[in-house]
Amino acid sequence: MATYAIGDIQGCYAPLARMLDRIAFDPAADRLWIVGDLVNRGPESLRVLRFLRDLGDAASIVLGNHDLYLLMVAAGFKRRDSDDTLFQVLEAPDRDELIDWLACLPLIKVHGEHVLVHAGLLPGWTVTRAQALATEVSTVLGGARARDFLLNLAGNRPERWSDGLKGWDRLRVIVNALTRLRFCTADGRMDLRAKGAPHKAPPGMLPWFRVPDRFSRTHTVVCGHWSALGFYREPGLIALDSGCVWGGKLTAIRIEDDAVFQVPG
Image (cartoon, rainbow, N blue to C red):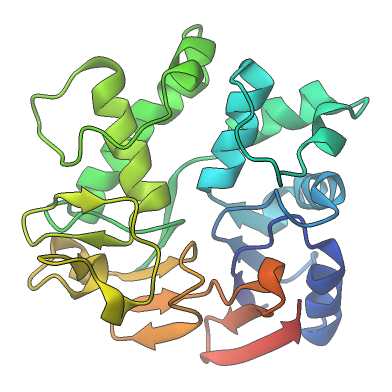
């Protein structure tokens, strides 16, 4: 049995299929860790969703910002991306089943010493705290207020976490941190507009994983989201978004021995 963590797929089913052939993936014995952004901008979001759903317990998956955007649009949020490729999912005969399945996925998963999350963790959050906050979001997403939540999710503010936050502001900060974070200050103020490489950090900002003494250093964070960072490893971090949808590569890493596999996007 082997465990493979795979970066942002974003509707690129063909590279995913090539990757699974490359690693000789056996769903009866192996496990996939998928770090979010299953859909959007690639040509086969619908096929990716159906495939990953049908893997059942063979895949451990967390939500990314593009997955949440699909849920928002399905709930009635006005589409804002002219280059999105969500129509194939939204017009599918099994649309409702897929949307319901997607909405049940968590924002964070912990597997022993590894943490799966799409973007990152704020420096003041322990892994346990991040799990608890993510559960707050999942509870709303799976309940009667899900549509209201999704229609109020968009936005970059508040820019920092506070235990006193309530309502949609509280949930928005949690989601933004776990699915959109790249740069922040040492005390956790996020800059969600900056998308460049780590050396292009805005003034006063750091890549979230380089904040000194961040509380999540107890675990290895396995994430994606940041194509300008690319595939990157350092103690406590495995970043897997190597820009497959932009013509880069799809990256996988075998957790047991750190073997790295890449296929063209």
